[in-house]
Every structure is written in C-alpha cells, then in structure tokens.
Length: 414
Image 1 (spheres, one colour):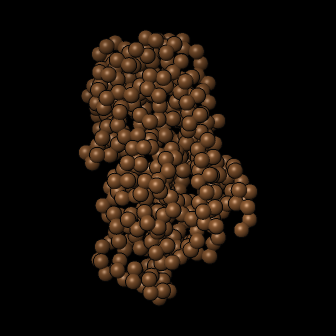
Image 2 (cartoon, rainbow, N blue to C red):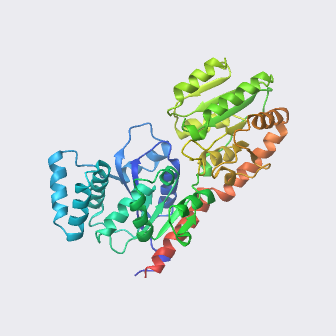
Image 3 (cartoon, rainbow, N blue to C red):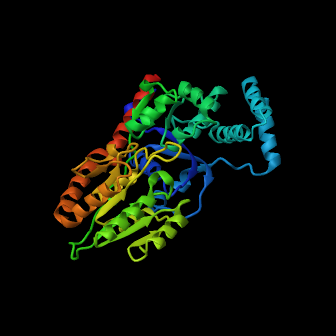
C-alpha cells in the first residue's frame, strides 16, 4: 500500500438529499476535503431544486453527485430486487425477511439499500462517510451482505437521527457493531449516542464547522440607537422562534428601540405571523422564509445581536450544536442562547455572548437591554466571538482533525 499520509484519498459521502439549503455543514466539510486535494464523490437519494448556495456552483458539487434513486419504473424495481435475491443466500434471506414483514418502512429501507449498493458497486473507495444515522444504517446493511469489503466506514450523527430512533433501533445496533467510527457535534450528542448503545471508544467529538473567509463583517459604525436582532433557523418547536416574538413584545413594553428579523421556513411560519399581528409588532419584526447563505450573511451584517432561545420540545429534542451560532459569532455578533442541548458548548458565556436559563424571558430581555445601552460591549463581544470561532470552528481546523481520523482508520486497516 502507498504511503497513506501522502496519498490523496477516494472519499464517498452518503447523504439523503443534496444539496439541502439548511445543511451547509455538509457542504463545508466536502469543500474542505476538495481543497486538500482528495477525490470526492457524493451519493444521494434525492436531488433538491434551487436555490443553491453559491459554493455549490463554485465547486461544481452537482457534477460530483450520483443520485441513487434511478429506478422509478416499477418493473425496473422488481428486476433489481430479483437480481439481488439470487446473488447470495445472505441477500436472499435479508430481502425475504423485509418483504415478509409486511412493513412498508422496512421494505422501503431495503429498496434504498439496493439502490445504494448498485450505485457503489465496482467503485474503489478508501473511506465511506455517511451523514445521519439512517444512511449509516444503509451502509451497515450492505456490509451485512458481505459487500464493500475492506472499506473503512464512518457515520456522523447530527440531531434528529438520535431523537427518534424507534424504527431504526435494531438497525442502529448492527451499525454500532459494523461502523468503524462515529462522530458527533457536541458532548450532549455524545451522551445521546451512548444512550442508544454506541460504545464511547467509537465516538469522536467533531463539531460541524464553517469557512470563516465567507463570513466577513463590513458592518458600518453605528449611527442610531436602534438595536437590530436576528434569528435564523427552521421554524420548529425546539428552536423556539415563538419565544423570539415574546421577547420582542417585552422589549416593546420597555420602550427599547429595536428591529428584529426572523429568517427560516417551517411548520410554525403561519402561527408566528399571527402572533406578530396579535401583538401589533408588524413594524418591529420582519418574517422571512428560507434564504441562501449569501442572504443570511448579509442579514447578519445588518444586525447587532443574534437571539436563539431554544427549548426542549415535547419529544425531548433540543439543538445539538446549532452551526448558525458559530456563523453569527464569526460575523462578530454576540449570541444569546438558552442552556439546553449542545448550544452552551458553542460560545463562551459572558465573553462571546450569554447563556440563559431555558424559558427565562425576562433574563433575555435584561441582557438585550444591557447590550442596547452598552454598544461598546456589543463590539467587544463581537471581536471575541470572531476569534473564538476562527480558533475552534473553522473548516480548516476541523478538517485537520477529520483528515487525521481518516488517515488513522486507514493505518489501522493495514
């Protein structure tokens, strides 16, 4: 085998859909590996329509992407299934077990395994890197068939894949056995994965990162006494965009001069719109849908603070890392978060922002009022925040660690 340290690796990234506008962390990781000279291939089940972030187009990532769900014709699906059924007794047993379960989800899972195996077959890879537990389970199922022999295999868990694993519980147990390594974005995520049965020695903490060169603040010197507040995230329960509106209502009652932007799509969009109208905050809060990375950076550059009062939702889920917090800090914004999930790990309390008790509306209001009356603290915290992210969450720093993970796995395989 050639000197691994000097070799360029053939790395396949396995994802459910590509490109997903909210999953910039996957794109950041892929682009960093391309910049290092590695040969990158992306395998996805679904192609999403524009808009795309500019970085997708700049690095021509769609040209590197292979879409596995190419068997829309029913006859082609049946032919594929029968071909696999008689390829080996293990595959025959697994396909029959799934079909005879009369469980649609299990049958769909097996079909996805067939699609992926067909796409990966006869290709040479050094590393398979699956993003999200479901895709890791698919690769481990294919390995159960004695395919993909000798290829090192990593799965990155991100969040929802650790909170609702009931259907995948049995698949996860096999995944934890067959997978070489699992990465998570916070200690909070590590604990979740251990509780699902993954051995601690197989888990590496590897936060998702960002290309800090894309996040450059050109914010002009402040000329008025209005504080600009920003929230960016999917409009779902555990991210608590409704609490952003409640906090703004309290600021209004205290005669704080503010403007607030809420950027994101999700199931709470309509209820947020109604809440804003009910509280007569239409002149204070602008509600946007999803936006590209470039548009979000522009919004951050027009803001003074970033507000993210997340909660535990009714299923117990919370934010595992929240890359947007690091993006905001990189744009020199102090961030205000609640003490749930992995968010407190992503800033320095009192230095780059504030960590407040979950649901403490008055606590958030008081900190915003303090920053409103002390713009010099906003500037100081913002500078601290930029330094913190560059040292701990840049794609380059995290890419160094990931590259070491890949190389160590290959060395251990010699």
